[in-house]
Image (cartoon, rainbow, N blue to C red; front, side):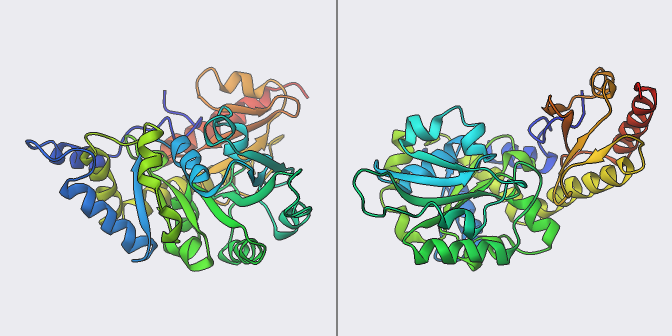
Length: 344
């Protein structure tokens, strides 16, 4: 059932599976007190800076919620785009578990600007009003767009100037870095990001994400929060082994670059299909497009992908580390036939 529904649909990269198998050798200390975890933590420091502190967790929702728990007190809030994953797709976990209010800002491209943030920074220190503490952005965004280092630096500068912190939901951080041909720290540590939820699952891991504190002072007490939020893996070596495979060489970049390249190829093909309109620039591994009425339903009989907006007919197409040129070309050909057959 390979298709274009989500990079979560993809399997595990063979190099990651091999790393898990290699770690499955005898006994090892539990709860992260093992050599694999120590190695993974060093590799994360290599990527995000020697000052950084990282903690491995099971999934992206936990990474985001734990980041917000660590950064906010109960009377504080988080500013994010209305389309942000933490606002739309976490099932209310930031509010229920982290106990923080989300200030969601409508945007055209799912990206925040300093202007979006500044107008919410009113009535500071007024005890009747929840106090913003964190600006959270998604890289790449839920609409497939990405932040440049300059844009992130501007957000970090405003946040720090006004006593706030900057969090990056980096479920697809690797895709953004690969697309810009920059190291991971160029979109995080080097531009003033405080905390990153660094994704692995969407980039070929079986499971596993990392909460990376670029500002190590903010990590105080985090190990207790991780345990309390049920995210301390007893057999932690098997999460850590995956990050070793991802980061010891260039697997993170190779996998993300393949997904990005296939999205670019598919977008180029769709531009030639009559009746198809791309709604966002293709800047990572996702494509958003409006199809003619009836074409989506016909295509979804054979190809899994999501309808993003039923009112407009907009769909989301996501490429993965294992998407091939043959699959892209076959899907594009089927789309052309479906669109040509759609009623005018």
